[in-house]
Amino acid sequence: MGKRSSIIKTLRDIALDHSDVAQPDLASMGREIGRVLHGRHADVIEALGPLRERRRGFERWMVAERARPGVSILVMAWPPGYATPVHDHGGLWGLEAMIAGALEVESFDKDDTDHSLRSTGRTWLGPGDATWFEAAEAHAHRCRNLSRHDTALTLHVYGGDLAQYLAYEQPGPSGHWIARPRQSIIAGRLTA
Image (cartoon, rainbow, N blue to C red; front, top):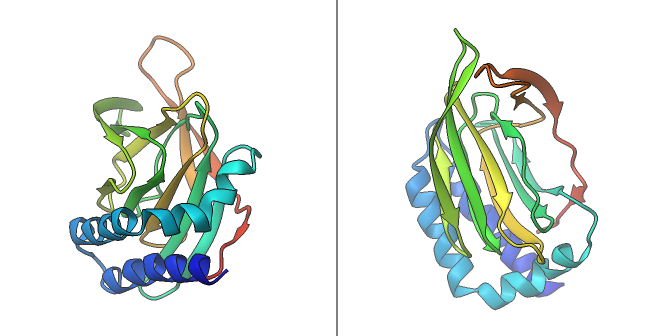
């Protein structure tokens, strides 16, 4: 339990320290989290490995949250081949870092006037890699675990409570997307 608590505390403290301002330097946060994930990979896998073995579907685990300035830190478990719908983050800034496995992240720009989404590119993340987005209503993305066999784990830091967000569906070839409200379900709490 000591190593688990220690590595989770280290990652939590980095995220909290870097998010102590309204507009944090997400690149610096990503570099420091990535450095720890690379340098202490064995500790991270030992501490969070049981989440990879649970096989209970996509899960969000709360690590920490703070009200002012708002921040929430989560670990997410991605079953083999799992893909999220295209979704936004309620205008919050965010950072995603790979703990274990590989993830594809496809980003989109939203146009609320014609209800369209335009793909702006893909990013592939491996252990220790991070991607981030600034606080913007126009940002959305879709994430996919690239493995057909292994559960992936990611660390997420958001500029507030991401309790609700919008997921987007494209019902036909028209190019229009329908936004549907969703709620974040937390599977449990990881203690540091």
